Amino acid sequence: MVGIDGLLVEVEVDIAYGLPAFSTVGLPEGAVRESKDRVKAAIKNSGYEFPNRRITVNLAPADVKKEGTGYDLPIALGILAAADIFKSGTLEQYSIIGELSLDGGVRPARGILPMALSARQAGLRGVLVPLENAREAAIVSGIDVIGIETLPQAVEFLAGIREIAPTVVDVDGVLKSNTAYAFDFEDVKGQEHVKRALEIAAAGGHNVLMKGPPGSGKTMLARRLPTILPDLSFGEALETTKIYSVMGLLPAGKPLLACRPFRSPHHTISDAGLIGGGQTPRPGEASLAHNGVLFLDESPEFRKNVLEVLRQPLEDGCVTIARASHSLSFPARFLLVAALNPCPCGYLGDLRHNCICTPMQVQRYESKISGPLLDRIDLHLEVPAVPFKEMSGIRNGESSAAIKKRVDQAREIQRERYRSRQGVYCNGQIGPQEIKMFCKIDRPSLALVETAVERLGLSARSFHRILKIARSIADLEAVDEIRQEHVAEAIQYRRLEKRK
Image 1: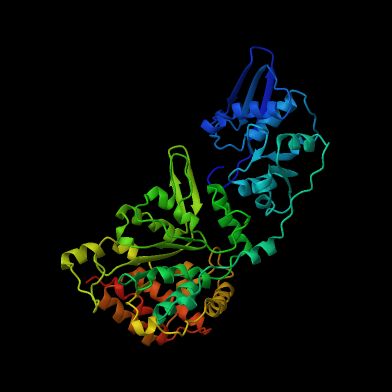
Image 2 (image 1 turned 135 degrees about the horizontal axis):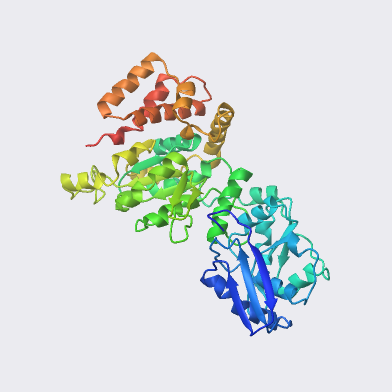
């Protein structure tokens, strides 16, 4: 694996006369160097004779670091083939991945999906993968996926002694069967204006900041946002599943992620944990939330440098991690939902509780979210405490299915509008050129925005945010023109930007 993409590695085995030795070359990391002991035990315990000669295993290309345990099975098969224990005319037509147990069993490995994609791009006939990973690899069409349980089974298949039917997966069926969410907006009592704003956020792909006292329902609302987002397309599901496959986080029995991810990292997370990194760069929470929702609860409690690293993915939809030898890019296009209290104690402005914070503490607390980051969040929402009468009522709120229907219609309008624009699928992704073309407003609306910019001290980026939000509101009503009431509603979602 290089980032979230597979790289074909050729395993070369040479067996020569001399003192018995087993060396692995080609920049192997710790787990790959240790494979010789697993391979030796697996070969012996599978009933084969291990060559008592000098064995050299080369992993090419030799200038790329090799990590993971997926090299065990190809190394073992290479040794057996080089020792003439079996002959195969198809060995070079298959990509082989798998970790070996000491008794010759084949254990699952990470990153099977992107590796299978690379094998197909290389024109190989098929892939031999652990049986537990076979359904994941079978998501890739146009290549034979052979699920292997033991080393002898792989030998017999490659030698032509045993036939193993390729694993087949009904991709459409998997997409449809795994789309159930555990939450629904009908569980939320009250907060109608917040639900309206979240509907706009889902319709246009806008980031959200929610400010309110503890227990007002910020987390409850955020968890239900994925339920009203449009269904994942196959391409989006494949992208998201690749990331989870690399991290070893695919749920058991789900070869393809069909639900939009919801990630809620703890506020003690590091910047590398949030956007990715490490000695060998791995995706972070921002990439795990790709095509879904990244929720930062108690966002001022996150370290400031951690919050600031979100600027690039919020603008570009990807994370670039540069190292001295190379740089990697991970996809990270997500909806950001940040939540915060009005003050450190949480009860500023609450009629039922007394706030114990000084003005200086409140100002210091609010300043933890910087102006540039706040500028990149489209909708700023006040989430007041829910009155007891609404909370104890028997009437349920509007269901996620009903809201999602309107969101889907708005997204379809946007897909048609931006069909000729590369990489743009919703209003939240458009740039200055698209804003100029598709977000035109009349003179009264322009005067209204001008007044808001002067009174609230908004930036040029905020002006563009208002136009994009107004465009999404108009799309929800299925109208072409952005009217004055759309602009007025969009402006009210930028009020928190005015520092007190």
